Length: 239
Ligand SMILES: NC(=O)c1ccc[n+]([C@@H]2O[C@H](COP(=O)([O-])OP(=O)(O)OC[C@H]3O[C@@H](n4cnc5c(N)ncnc54)[C@H](OP(=O)(O)O)[C@@H]3O)[C@@H](O)[C@H]2O)c1
Image 1 (cartoon, rainbow, N blue to C red):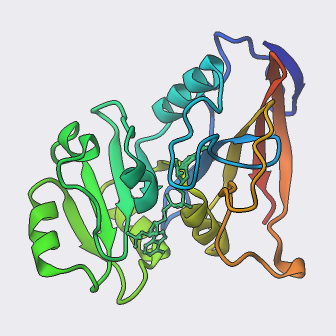
Image 2 (cartoon, helix red, strand yellow; image 1 turned 120 degrees about the vertical axis):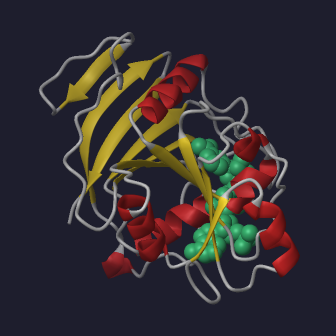
């Protein structure tokens, strides 16, 4: 692995990159939040069709770095569609949260089974009673809004009730847009896989309604590593 740029002043090898990241302290009302995604050169987040997993997009090195980023977090958060795709597995010790309007997620998913007492469902008043009862068997169900989950409120819960100081957000694009829109992403770890997918219907790393030109989120580069033409980029949000 080659270090192309590292403005942290460190020089990492494949063995040490992202092993122990020193993040700034968490703000008082939420965790410090870092996003991790892998995309093709054209920004797509799956090599399959809409609703497919990200399988095959990143290399084994990307998979390894993804696990290291998880080990730097006390909790991970995903959108419900990413959970519905399946194949979502985390170390049992890692607290995990999913965001959903109506709770259309399988209560028997590994996401819940692997971590009794350490899974959280952030939802709204739209969740049907039956689904709430089923999910309460396997997770903390936290209502944070009428029609949409108020993410700021959800993150305050993670910080104050669950003691989470470092949160990893793992997408997908729908949740990512809402997190950026609420000013909740502090850093973005982006793996750029040397592949081109194409397809205007295939989701990209950040979806949603998009930002007006003058409101586009500005980020600054922190580091760039490379292996076999795959880039491991780290950006920090400019406030
Ligand atoms: N390449 C990568 O690194 C990567 C990483 C993750 C995912 N993916 C891929 O991304 C795709 C899924 O992405 P996506 O953009 O379709 O979906 P997503 O962001 O995973 O999930 C969107 C869903 O999350 C819930 N949600 C998000 N914000 C909410 C809010 N404020 N209030 C209430 N609910 C909220 C809603 O769930 P409900 O519909 O239940 O209301 C919404 O439909 C999959 O193909 C997956 O494989 C790729």
